[in-house]
Image (cartoon, rainbow, N blue to C red; front, side):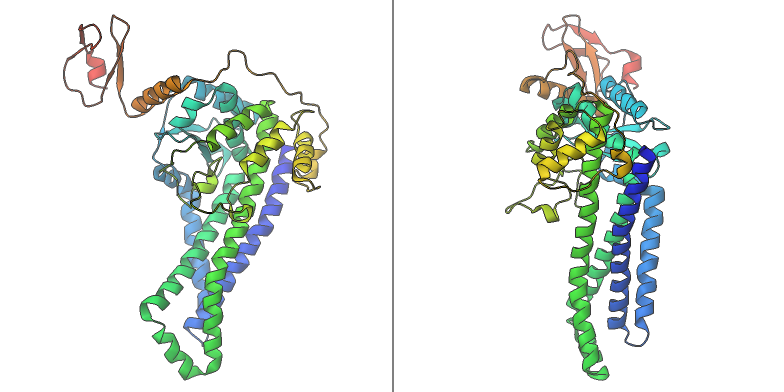
Length: 409
């Protein structure tokens, strides 16, 4: 059934992907014609396709590592955060992934998360330190379930190539428009005088298309991104059997005011919640990379009848106020009842002081601080470049010798 869902997702995404390809070819054709009236359109198409091919190859083989490096993500072991490792492992088993994803943490206060990996066999889940300090276990499971769903549903491959095609369109358009700016359009005006009024019309069309093509491609890209966020929410609710966990996590992440400096316009669609805060006028749903958080939360909390795909689809239609098929027919044909489980025992939210302490300790761990507990019970935090053989406890005044193993770590 999940394979049928993946096939349906790919089919619908391919249509949008094909539309972006047509935009790219048309852009190359028109700009080539504007540059070189005699046969330049074919050179323009060739150049556009070559650029897209090069960027696609680089993205396919190195896209994940580039994204992780841009985000300043650090790979961690279970010892750094055992609960995170356990939750990722649980969701990996529930989603039937062939291999355990690598786990990365971004040393930032803003809570957020994303997944990378062209194939499930070579995937990674990345969360921020701020996310780990704010969410309880059920909420963390909801977020990880969402990201694991992106991997299982093969979303990342589609988003990567759609993003590359968008980048190609934007790059070609910007090069053309900037060339007009730097030359003042003199080269093209002289060509228009030499080749008549027709070439001037071609140039005007080229300028208009160079402006509109990236906008149209972005709308297609955003449409792909928003649909996949809904599907990942539905899959997470099914994997965790607890929609409230993800709903509560989305509220906490979206209410955060800290900026995520590791994110940019290119990487923003990869995150579970848009990390770029709109300035001034609020962005409309049409130009947003993510569905409205309030809407996503309402859909999840309205799944009273169960945690199956059909329950999410029913809730989706109610909240949207229309019958819009989100889940493919293969997913809706599964009538198996999946009861919503109760909250995990002992799961509670940390207060502000505990959140700050947890965040601070985690950031120090990521930055190679060493923790040494004094006999009085105080935990001493030793920076990585501390070169002395002992440290004095500020609480009791006792001198603590630093073991050789710690000093050389």
